Image (cartoon, rainbow, N blue to C red; front, side):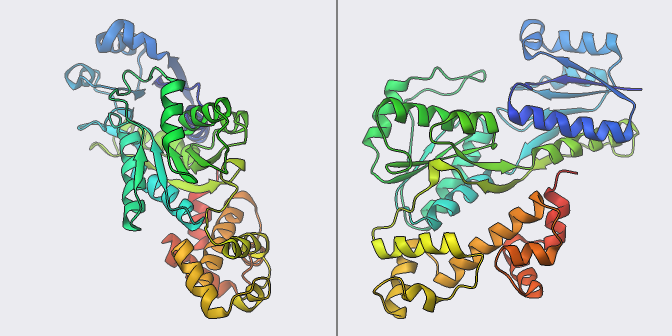
Length: 385
């Protein structure tokens, strides 16, 4: 029987999904037994205490959320350890980490497609996941020539929590240009934003559109309006953690290897339900596309609903969204198709048709270009097994 010591926080949706993935692998490869050690145990007894307990229990491996690592102490155990990143990635150990930068880029592209010209990021710099999400967001926005406003009161997140100051945050929010697209480092911090906006009568999404990360259903639906959020491939990441640990335990691999959790898609809810375009007719076009992209749709159809010529429509549309009408429609259809691939069991051709693509061969080619994998590979990669 393999014994796995869990030294991490499983109170969040992210943590629970991660554990579900590890347990799913354990059921396939078992028998495994788990012991959930609370984070405060390490705070009280240090790494020496964790090592003593692991030795007495006979742990075969450890999954741990560590803000700092004393390799000299932990290596005495001579068992595989996978570290869930918090402050920084750990050199010399396997990391459970994420494509944090890519998550920030996904957030920026989502808001840019909605026509925003002003952007804000709510997060800190002294943890790798916050810092890199902010960097990805800022770089993608800056490429389009727009500024990013960041909250910075001179303090940093320390030991996992920051003393939230609603009044200070409200002053920052009130001073931001409007309308603005705000990306928060995760759903917990996005919920802080929506709560402060409620307290100070800041309209969401009219003044500030808010997007979080983790797609924690509880946090997203506590918010008013409900939070849009980036869904991460967490449960499959947990499965890969279990698989990696098993390979270490059986001595099939020995060198440290990382598990990288990818962003999958944006789950849109009320906090981002608007377009920030200055031209009301382009706003009408965007709304019409969002309601009808699953149906046959052409530029001629759009011209019929607004007083613009084809040339004027194309010019103004690209000015507002950064892409052509055709590109925008294709983007919406691909995102719908991708969502159907991982949320339904529809055959690929039916999923494509449901997203507005009558020709599966054509959609497959477009999908590979946008997602860098085939539709079947995408379904296998991101569907919960």
